[in-house]
Image (cartoon, rainbow over all chains, first blue to last red; front, side, top):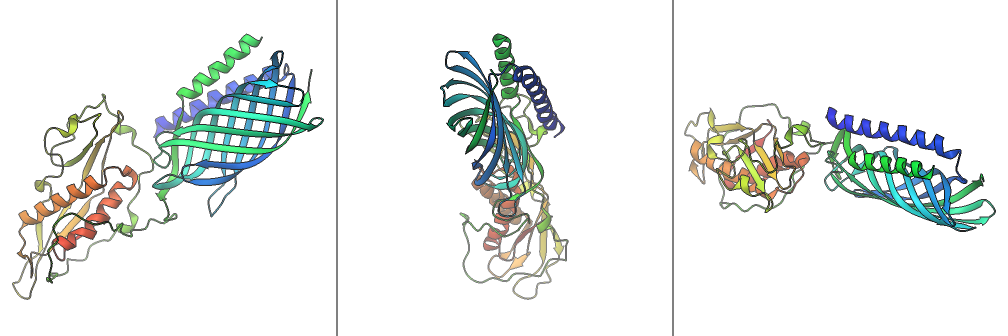
Length: 182
Length: 230
């Protein structure tokens, strides 16, 4: 048991350190920052859930309309049917295409989660880390104000017999606000 | 600058892909049963020959602790179950104390020894002597720990179920005298059959289902027989 916790802890710690380093080092040079609040659905195992997802991101123009983007989406999964609050935090790195009023990006993602869940046979609270993929699009309809939609899928698995293997799928959408730095 | 940033991202990706894992925190419970651990039976049919007619149920066994509602459920696979080598049967299988489940990808553990529970594992002893009166009498029982080894992937599992006690009369109206050998044989066959039917069940609920299913069926084979925990 200890080894599993060590793995989760080490993965999360290394991720946090890398994330902090990246955020600090790259925000200063970002060409665009964005943030907002989305609502949508989340499913892992057999139980779907509502997701309330504040998010922020940064992007850099690489060449012409090509952008490199960083995005973090922290989904709060409200308790439904007597369950407890869950958290599914997703960080993604993506390559995208940007136009004046719209962007689209896709890339690998990584999540840390602490969620109540039910598998085919068991229910319980599961903590873990999960790699996955992410796609996001943003459309700006009134100056810096726009709408973003995010879809991602993560591979969930490990020693938990509640979620021994499978995928977590989430689709959220909501308002987004952007700041152009340069 | 961009090259450094990209390399940094790639490092993050590589580190997290390798580190993917999860763990159940605290207790878990069977789906659909809430947080309480119900002992309701699962109620599927059996394949063992069931005698018909009415028989005596023998004398009641002595009072014993009933812990059927406190059986713990495994929520995480045990790290100690990791194999030392891929598809290596080791010494813990095929000796009559372990039910072994195999797949096409890993058949070796099932090809030798006793693939199931041996009757010698069930050592029945008389608890209440038969006084010879009435249609049924006496009581005998055996306590066993059933082990399971499942070789369905390159990460095989093995576990031991909590001790269970199988009890049955020494004599009933339909089957007459029930010897310890007969009791052991019936118990071994039933445990092997039910384990085979549950071969795809997660180990967290396997033992619970095994005990419940055996208890549901054994009374139809030997009238008055029961399976309890411990």
